[in-house]
Amino acid sequence: MNRTRARLSDGREIVYYDEAPGRVPVPDPRGLPPVEPVCETRRDPLTGDHVTITAHRNTRTFLPPADQCPLCPGGPASEVPDPSYDVVVFENRFPSFDVRTPPVPPAIDGVERARGAGRCEVVCFTDDHSASMARLPVPRVRTVIDAWADRTAELSAMPEVAQVFVFENRGVEIGVTLHHPHGQIYGYPFVTPRTERMLAMAAARPGLFGDVLKAEREGGRVVASGEHWTAYVPAAARWPVEVHLMPHRHVPDFTALDASERDELAVLYRDLLRRCDALYGTPLPYVAGWHQAPVGEGRDLLRLHLELFSVRRAPDKIKYLAGSESGMAAWINDVRPEDVAARLRAVTAG
Image 1 (cartoon, rainbow, N blue to C red):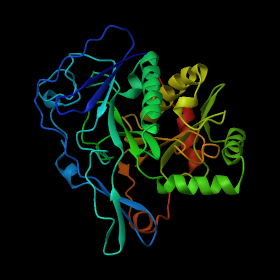
Image 2 (image 1 turned 45 degrees about the vertical axis):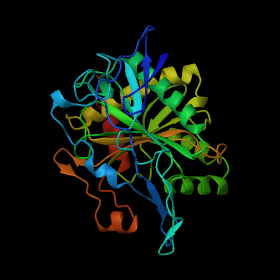
Image 3 (image 1 turned 90 degrees about the vertical axis):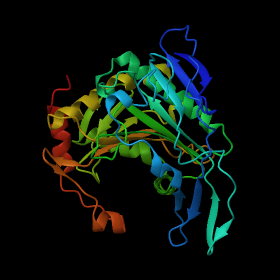
Image 4 (image 1 turned 30 degrees about the vertical axis):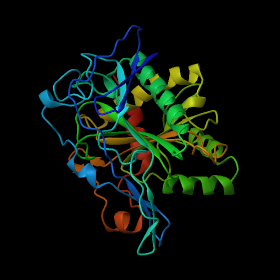
């Protein structure tokens, strides 16, 4: 992997991750004004959850035609000035968290407030607009993994960042705003509610992640496995399609994976995505979220793992989060996890 840094015309950083050396970045010709994000967090006094307020994101680009895609290289609307790239990462033009956001008063109507300081990045997996992560060659998936690890290390070193979340939203049913194959990385200024709950469970039960992995490997919901990783449908799956991918060794984040673990991950992750697309014979809308330990706490408790889920519950049906899920966070799944695991094992991932 060859890393090359540059700046866009508004001052945002862009980083190229190439499989061959020699890149000389093309200057951004757009002459954009400096980024002036206004990101704020407020603490819900009833739950303690952080809620982020980012009114400027309401104007972000929404499903443009292919010839105006900001992630395709070199075009007049492109965020990537170069005519081609392997993998590229840049600061989001419409961030949820940004260290440049101005100070805010410490409270409003008794509710705790803070600057939404942190970092949000866009990760483009390929310059091919019509591709997908599932259809990339294995070496390119490996480059993406190396980029995730490099960005995790850099964001974790920022004093404003408490947790790094790597994820991909795919499909209009999920709510994507750009079709080009890409993901995102959030450097949160707080530890997220789901991570706090997992840390509490792991603290109360030492060895929790190892125990869960052992039970799943001995159960009937394994989808695929190798020397270093296992993909399985969890017994208490919330979503109609949900698969977790967990390393056999306890590692807190991408930076701790060794070369052999990254090599196998590139193969197994692509295999899993291809199985998901084959499940209903059409590209599966999904969220693929990589859970990593927070920067400063719980690194011995939380194990890096993927949680991939989809709202599709049948070829022509979508699972909507209604009263129970959205209102009470009490999940009701319409599909047996054992059935989904069996179908994912049975499909051809070619």
